Image 1 (cartoon, rainbow, N blue to C red):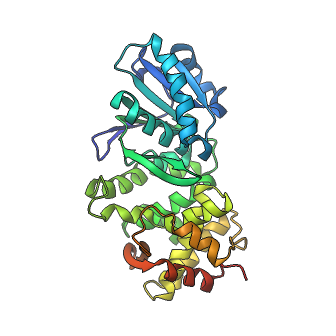
Image 2 (cartoon, rainbow, N blue to C red; image 1 turned 60 degrees about the vertical axis):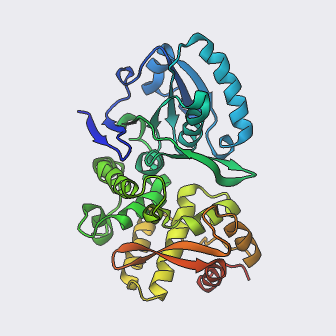
Image 3 (spheres, rainbow, N blue to C red; image 1 turned 180 degrees about the vertical axis):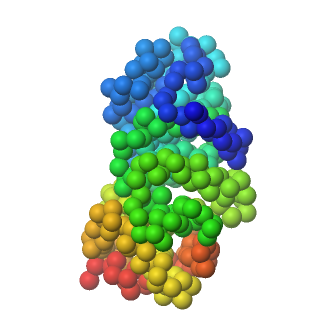
Length: 343
């Protein structure tokens, strides 16, 4: 049975067993599909009924050069479609970012539907209404707020995926959840996160993010900034190492939690629970990304939320995320103390 939620922009969020054509407004629909899903049995009916553009997902897709190339293809494909068009993104986070931006600017905005096909997108990036492109290999430098009218999440497209590919955003959401939340049981009971558990709790994951977004939908008051928990250092690690977004956010979360322990905001017990969870899932926490202070400085000054040499930084105190102003120098100093800086 389908489960339906409402997002902070009144978007319809549907959790379903299988993706079906009943959700789409054919024949004026243009599908953008991750080419890795080209032969997925769940998508065969879509290929037969709609106009499909296959794209190579990844950070390289989120570029102005890719946008220009795909726009030319869109111009060609829409010759046989009548406006108003519907653009549908079927893929992970980079597909959602790219197609959300494209939908927001094409003809000054066309209807946009997201079908996240990774745990990372299903838990986090498909929600919240933001999209972005990279510029000069720096993440998310241009973007718009353009919520999808629908977000369709199909179990059949997620069930065989490893939850470890989304552990950064999964752990972030668990830590942002209320203390009484059932999500925290995986930390306290020393259990592992399975795909079955994540699907069962997916509505709660989505609700936690959307409740925060609802308070500050267009990032005006600063309340939405807690969603950047783990991302300031995480984005620096991602830019320097090429690690996945999720794994980079994990390092950012560990950095923030360690800093919070050193400030006596939290006890070391929570940090130990997080380490235990990551060890149970096979993460090698000895492979700490080490770079020079200059390299970290170069990555941190590219943060789009920086004001002069100051940053709002998300720390953790008494079971909730808090925001503190810090300097980049403070972060560099703490990176050195924690062993992130190469000798």
